Image (tube, rainbow, N blue to C red; front, side):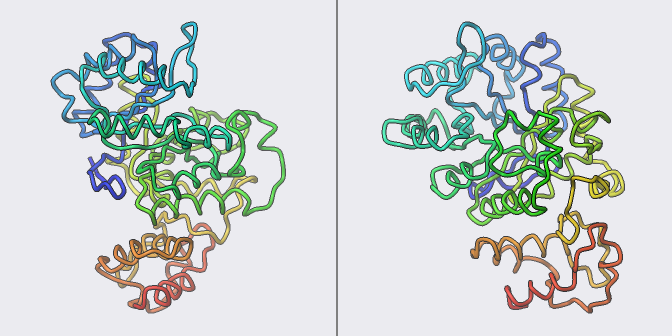
Length: 381
């Protein structure tokens, strides 16, 4: 397993996590098998947002005696209404379901407590205002029942507002090549409508706003948990409305290439699906190559660095993708964290000889040499 730091918290988190959504109605033996497969390969992050008692009980059994080996993300505001999933901001109900989660998981704390599904401005104000869910989350953290506070969202403006607030250390956000073609403020329901992908829009409308969010997270040390990396499985279906077809490994490679991302939480129904995600760890660079997305008519990223490092190897061993990512973070956010990470690189941009090999290799027609020169200008070497 490969691990990254959970943002400014500095905790090691596996780059492949487990999203439990599709296991909600699975039998106990399936959940136990999937969890065992994940943990045996070093997975240490599980997102469990569902309020259903059965799935909570089953995960409690599956994690028995191994709770200490995994970080669990629970969601404050995810409840049930008449047996169906519901979202509420009623603090009493939220605390009841939170305590229920602790009891059913047979634990006395949750590692990451997410403010659940905050997508609208008025809802954000309700959650973050005095007396709102944030207040409850802070109390639970003070009581030792929650260790880290995060938020799940699907819209860039709201997510960015939360990141800028300083209250959250983790942002759970959808990242995949299909949704990244869409405007950053699009409502989640529209993501799954075919007509959405037929609308014309400025080339930078979607990518710029989402990229700014990712860089803001990286600059502020807010860990990004990439949800929906497969776009709910759409990206495996040739008939999906985005027209983008990729493998699980390519999808995970795309998500993990984005600034600020520390882990992904692909939804896995079976052991085979869990293994398909874990295959990323042993995949070749060719298998991880997601440059095929640029052949799609709605994907217009020519000239934009995707940090994929298909331009490597560099004759002087510059990690071009990382250098460009840190440069972009510094340009967007202007912070010292990017500079600190840049200084730790074994080879910096000033070593560039402008040979042009990287430009020839780049599948997105990026002016790599100009980007490298910008790094020298920004970081001084």
